[in-house]
Length: 409
Image (cartoon, rainbow, N blue to C red; front, side, top):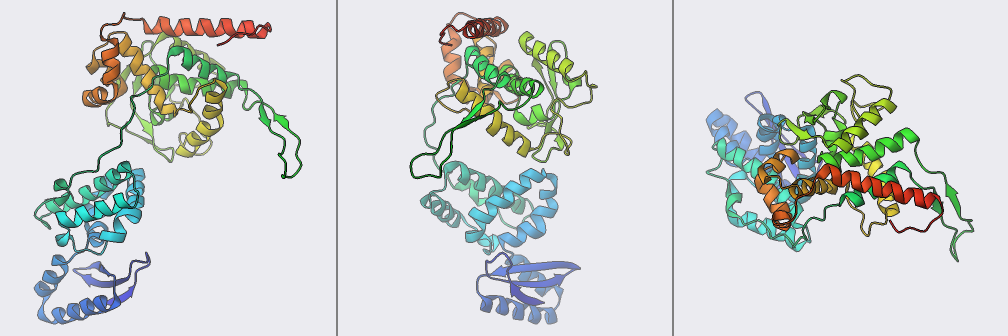
């Protein structure tokens, strides 16, 4: 038994061995840690039952997570999920609740904790993430009969601010962005302003090669015309590409390791003819790689990592949005709304559309209710023909621009 400073900076830790396992408990004050250590030594003389009564009745939240939740439940989660949970706990939960005995975590204490986060300006989305992690821990404790139930269920979650409805890209806007990705413009560096160190303006060559530019456009097309999530694109193999469907069986985590999809289920996604043509042309340009090869090759990791993806977003996608004249810089993930919009405009049933996107009907209705109402009485379209028409229009505009005519895209 010993009392030491907590390396996380929360106070003091009393450590001891019990039934061959190393145990610990955190205290804000050293005198409390010393008192517990002294009581533990006294109960050791009384027998194992007396020690167990002391150590189990006052187990803190931090101790429960370290000694029970992580070994019993945390090991079943993805490494990326555990990393996110650890970050949320360190910033938003530990400072208030880490040293609180788990039996003393009541509804009133949790309400006060949540109110403190909101007063500190923490967003409702971040509070929800903290609640998700804390609820998992408390539910595990309740299932282990350490506490009567999960008190967080009785604490109302924070209200979220109003969010405007999704803004799907039309095929014409998608093609503008794809064109900017296929043919990126040189990048201008402005000259220095008054008061700055003298520097002349200059231009950098357009980034990438013909092959990487073709790849960049294909990435955006897979989201806009097949609704794939970024992780699913990073885990896509050539053998997953059929004549009429894409087979989505896996995704890539933030470290580039292959894993199941977000829902843990496999789905078949309709392969629109224009996208099938893009995929075929890209495979030819890549030298006909084998079926097991990943569409996006990585240098070191099995697949593109989250870092690779973020670099692509910053260096390729954002400049393409600006070059296309978009009045906002959209996230690539937002292109999924375009695929949903195309399917709904065709008159597809919500259940079928939800399966194509890989989520529930409830999520579809909450996200796209305004689009469902918009297309309910509208003339149905043909998604493939809409894309072809946008490409023909864009190609004609490009030819006119190359001839020196002023045309507004």
